[in-house]
Structure formats: C-alpha cells, structure tokens
Image (cartoon, rainbow, N blue to C red):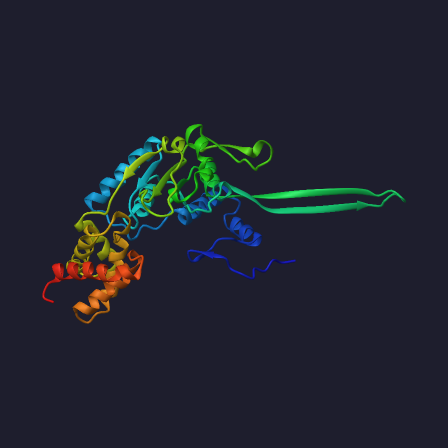
Amino acid sequence: MVYQPIHQRKVIGRRLHKTLDEHVQEREEYNGREEVYLNQAHEQEFEFLVPCMDKLVETDEIKKLIERVSHWVDLGYPPHIIGPTGCGKTTLALAAASRTGRPTLWINGDDQMTTSDLIGGYSEIETSSVRDRFVHNVMINKDRTKYTWVDNPLTIACKYGYTLVYNEFSRSKPIANNILLSVLEEGILELPIMFGTERYIDVHPDFNMIFTSNNIEYAGIHTPQDALLDRLIHIFIDYYDLETEASIVVKHTDIPYEDAEKIVKVIRLIRDRMPPASKPSTRAEVMISYGMQNLDKYNFEDMQTIYLDVLGSKIREMKEYDAFRDIVRAAIKNVYGGF
C-alpha cells in the first residue's frame, strides 16, 4: 500500500513532514554517503529553526543591548529582559539568540501554561489485545499498551543544545516553571511523567535560555518564584531613543525618515501624559505610519482619527475618551503645527 498524503503540512511556507519514500529517495541521491546526507538534513533543520531577522534595526543603542544580552548568554547565565509592551524585547532576545550560532526555539507564556507545555507528554496511548485459542478449551489473553512521547520546546532545546526564548515568561504561573530550576542549576532536565531511565536528560552544553517579561504593573503578570529569579540576569529596558524608534518605523513601512520622526515625536508626547501600563508602544507607531500612508495630504481630523483608532486600547472606558482625545490633539498640534 502506497501512502498518499492528503494534506501537505506547511510551516512558514514549506512542508514540515516527508513520507518514507521521499526520505529513501533523498538517501539514494547521495549514493550511500550517509554523512553527507545527515549534514544536509542538519543544515535544513538549522535553517528552519533560526528566526528571520530581516526587520532588525541596529542603531548604536540596539547594538549595545544585543551585546549586553549576548555577553551573559556566552557566560552561561540566562538573561531576563524586562520592559513595557512593544518596546522590542522579543526582537532583542531573538537577535541575541541568533548570535549563538545554534538553532532557536521559542515559547509564549500564558496563564494556562503547564509543565507539559514546556517538556512534552504522551500524545498517543495504543492498546492491543491477543486472544490465543490454539489449545482446545484453553484461552490465553495478552494485553499490551504502547505510549508515544512527544517532546516540547524545552526538551528539544536541552537534548540538542538549542537556544530557547521564553517569551512573556511572567504571564505563566510559577508552578509551571519549577522544572527550570534543575535545568539551570544542575544541568538536568527531569521529565516527571516519563517512565524508566529516560526520565532524566543531561542538558546539552550548548543549551541556552533567554526570557522576556512585561513590567510588574501590567495586568495578567505573575511574580516568579525567588529561587528561579535568583538564577537569571535581569536586564531592564525602556522604549528606545527618538532616532532608533524612527529608524524602526522606516524599516517596517518605508516612509521617509522625516515623517517617521514626527509620528514618533507625537507618541513620545502622549507617553509623557499616560500611566506606565498605558503608554503607547513602538508597534503603535508602525501601525499609525501605515494608516498615514493612505492620506493624500495631512489634515488634522484624519490624523487625529488614525491616532485614536490605533491607540484605542489605552482607553478603558468611554468616559475616558474625551480626556484622551485632548491629549492626542495637543500632541499632534505640538509636532505638526499649522492646524
């Protein structure tokens, strides 16, 4: 029977799984040169796992931060990057991870995160039965249960020496992260629901972790256990300087630098009037830039509407709208003038 795939599984535009016949064909193309085939397979895997950083902007400020994070990664201490929403924590973590020269995996924390989401679990339990009636009036029963284990990102990274970026680390409940204590201290990953000798895994010497978290005043944040925090290097960052933020906007939208700079200036004025957890992010500047590209010419009402639409998440109740609109209006007039 020939296996016919009915669904071409794709991740980031390419098939993730191959049939047995395809693997055999690839091996035959190398005429038995097994080492060449395995090296080629590893290079393909490496390419798949390393994140694409085509939008990375490397101003002096960002270069210094990447070098700061990479310094601790090289020393074997996992950095914990802490900062407000949309300030570039994930991009910074992935940029530092790419410098390790190892494949990178990442996982996003949330309130429902469990230990199994990190290490893996049994995805399939297969039970089979045998009834033997070879001898008359004698029946032999035999039951067999087969468990299939699937690794999740932490286990994969520990086994093969990859870099794991744990994004939104503080949104996970502390109990889910207890598994990390022995990984970071003793270099041992324990799989508590695994059977037998495979319960313990020696952490690969090239394994690294980088964490990112929001500031503590944000909603949905859990305070991690002290024992784990004591094993991390904590790097606090804020929104970048004017030049860096404007360069990021240009990189994402291709608008002229002068236009990007004005948008960033408006957002920075609005930040000065907002509480810490409500300050608009660099991501908002990019979204506003896209909205402004559709304007034939700048006029106050259209500009104000675009800013309010993008920044609407900072308003908790309708009664706050008028006050927030006044803040936006004043910032736009301050930067653009002439209205």
